[in-house]
Length: 449
Image (tube, rainbow, N blue to C red; front, side):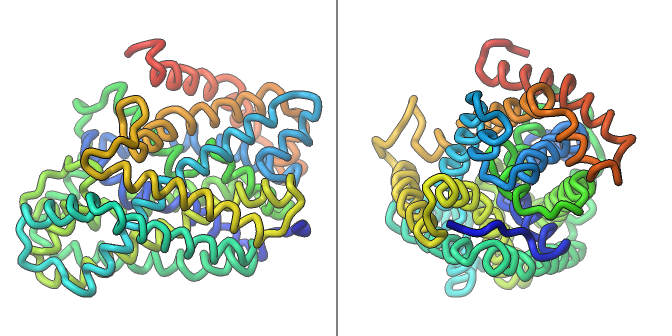
């Protein structure tokens, strides 16, 4: 069984937690969601949802983890030993497992595109060829599977090293590298003719596009991007040192998450507008639309190499946070070593990823409720499991956890954030539960807007 450990430094803490948040949610999902929901109108709503809902939930998950030093399941057992709140932690761990199952497939696409950028490049390829190549790649089944298994192996290799020597060490290297690449891509995009149009699309709000769907998309994106409701932040909370300010950490992570997402949009949309590509291309924006942009722009192959390296870095820093909640659960509850825990997780996630990859093959019978397994897990975790898990956590912290315990964790025993605690606690007890309840009821079809 692993000894009690914590993050080695303040920078390491920020790098690891930010690495959990800054992933494919920023590079893959955020740009196409912004494109489908009115550009900067969506960004404004996303900022509001992050400040009033996502960041307080993150703080609440930190409270549960740091106050107990346990995994997401064990933390609830410590705080409410005679009640079944521990099932909320188990629900979050299961959510992490499901997300990593399909996430590894998407990350595998990124690995394959790095290979393509280095070996074949994108120059001179027509839209029909790029689309056909992507579809043919998916329809092989085995190619996405091999790429996903490679990604799972790389992720497991990091997690097996533990918190300080594995997860923290790699994030302290990869997060600055990610920032360097995305800033470099943004600087390059300023030279493109469509730069102004791309900036207008992202920065000039079209409030006529705002509807209830915009709010739902923004809330869902904040949960997915900030790894909420899936045990990650509870688990990382167990490693946060007692002197660290939880509100400051959560706000820093929220700002970093949003900054990378917006910078990704700044890097992507100028090229999209320069070459007359539809900015609302949807989930294929990164893997079909952007290779088309790279095929037409000067130096597109070099741009493509760095972009898909960025995608890979973002994916792997997030993926370690999906394995760690499951890993700590197995270590603490089954009293086993980290090596054995990671091996167990890797085998089961690999099996799930194989089914996810092959479910996307044309004509596949691997379907649940009319959807292929990949889409089912993506939609179920995003639209139900994450918000429902976050709702249960926020209800627990606001109504069932000891108020003084929460106060001591949020204020560092009265040394900071004392005035802000009342605002935080009001949101946690009343505002966020109501908003999330309406959100979940709408997703379940019980109420309609």
